[in-house]
Image (cartoon, rainbow, N blue to C red; front, top):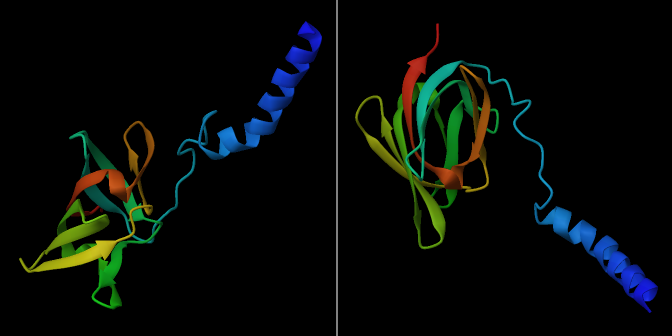
Length: 142
């Protein structure tokens, strides 16, 4: 009887393993490699908990622009025109308020699952936009 119970428990564990792994249990790949953007921008990124990190070679999904929806269209704002990006959830969507280098402001909706990546002095870094509070663009690294 005890043998049958152990076999049943093992079978249940093995059958549920793919589901558990799909949910993220069991770890995952860290940011061992990140995209290399065309341009090298220095930013100070602050997550929603207030942790700040300084990043070189910053990009969003490997691109050197902020991509989002503006009304019914899509807008790509190059990082060289951006001074600050402030992100917040509004009615279940992720809103990005961009302050441009000329002082103008642009409001758009961005995809929360997009990855922001960059390099710190101590290793590679990545974070989903939904976990970011603000991105201060310091400018290109020369």
